[in-house]
Each structure stands twice: as structure tokens, then as C-alpha cells.
Length: 101
Image (tube, rainbow, N blue to C red; front, side, top):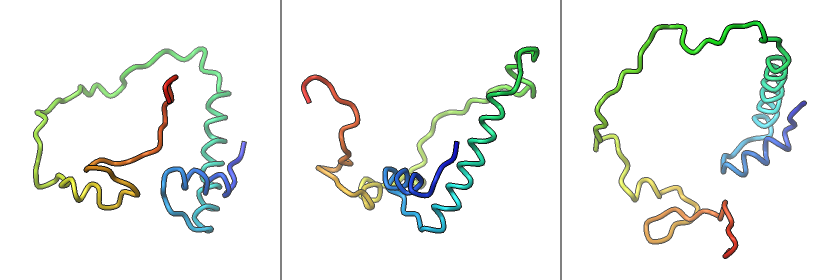
């Protein structure tokens, strides 16, 4: 499987990320290389490999969830680059549909 720069441009447009012609070509090549590696991994025979959940011995270290105001955006800063806003919220297209809309 391969990815071309047209597909990269389409994905970039969906994500609202500007990409130059040169960048789209480089990304297409990198995505293709990644897909080749993933395909090799998918084909690898791991049937005789023991299941491993944790190999480092590290344990999850939890910390208190503290809001640091100096690292937070104001609402105006958060919305500054939004394409569309309404009453202080981001406006985005519907992603999920139900029988009423």
C-alpha cells in the first residue's frame, strides 16, 4: 500500500493543517514507509512468543491534578485561531448523525 501527496493534502485539509507541495511529497513517502513496516509486523509470526505486559518494572506514578493558571489559555486565546465561533464556543461540522438531523 502506498500514500500519494493528493491523499496527504486531503488529510491535511481535513485537519486544517497547511502543507506545501514539498511537504506533502515528503509526508507521502514517510506514510508509505510506515505502512510497509506495519505490514511487515502484521505478517510476522508471533504465535510462539509469550505474552508480555510489562518488561521494565516501572509502576504508574500518579500526581495530584493541579491547574496551573499561568500555563492555561484564556477563552479568547483558545478561540483566537478558530475558523468559526458562536457565543464563546468552537463551531465545527456535525460528525455524528441521529434520526433527527
